[in-house]
Length: 508
Image (tube, rainbow, N blue to C red):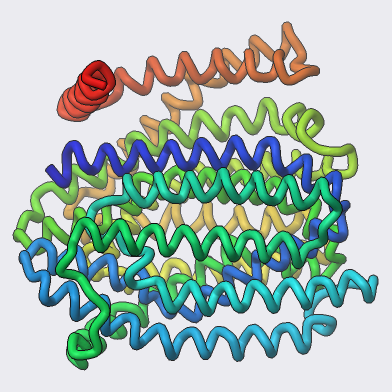
């Protein structure tokens, strides 16, 4: 059940959520950039990069909760689940206080960290950061009971709630922007909607498991030790992920201007969302792997890993090929002329995407088996290389230098080092890993490239209708080939899921 239908439901609802976010980003980004302008949008990007960094005070507890709740469920120990949730709540009380102190220090010294010449914008950014800091505190206090549905293998419910919140949030932001409100009002709206979504999630969890309750007597020092022991590695991993994926705004804002951060952000955001698309597969796998481990079922690990890199390599290769052919047309149609450099950034970032994104499945396996310390070593090397290369290359080449500073470490580490690490964990030969990986990536590129080259040479996509006709043709061809490479058991599961949905619709 967990590895079959429920996992597929979790993955497909994650993809649905991803599709919704991409659609919102597609329409909302041109809207917000045109209203805020380069500098204020850059400040907006930095505010949410700071939100990510404040979330770092989580010290990896969220991953720890998924790991231990899933394992306790596999052991059918609801008393232990209660102990985990309540012990985690006590830990988060301390973490919330730490996050607030860090936030106040950043706000007090913001002008020495980021180049914001306009004093009015500087004060507005500080006020916005204060609201964001309050949001992080409340999020932490509610997190154990409000954000662990995935640990109970119900990512489908969590994803549905997130999608509703996402739609309400964007409606509120559009209204406030049109009404002329500033950044502070925008983040207050985000905070209120996020808070209501957390309350909704708590109610849902309580209905699913009435035996779960907030009670001080469930606090357990041994559980706290286990949670913190697992989370200390997760914490360092989260730090490295933030350095790798969210440091761009601070590097550009500190070394060039806040406006440069705003111009770079749309390209980086595209790849952030593609990574989230892959995480839609990887994240639901973590509790599944932990559950399999609790049942001493380790034979499927190699199969899960090889399937993951097979399918994800194909998808990312199709996407990267599309970037090479259409990045400039896409940015030209999507954003104002001053954002044109984002197209070259997209092309550079597409190169390593085919190499590092398939390994997200390997990351999930490491987390599920508590072997994520191996991942940390790779991320430490990547983070250090990125910072050094980015600072050097930004100084010489500007924004495109940051893109190269991101791409080079990913190509080297995930192309050469990571496969050697993961092969020992999943017990798969290095040759089989490379063969599966390269074969699928080549198939994705070979599927998309001829169609893209033919289409773009005969019909220039100078409007959205033309652009999406190109994209649709490539996606239809890729979907056909993608279905052909599905393994027989996955085709069966997919067919069963579609039939069950069809039966549900007909009964209604």
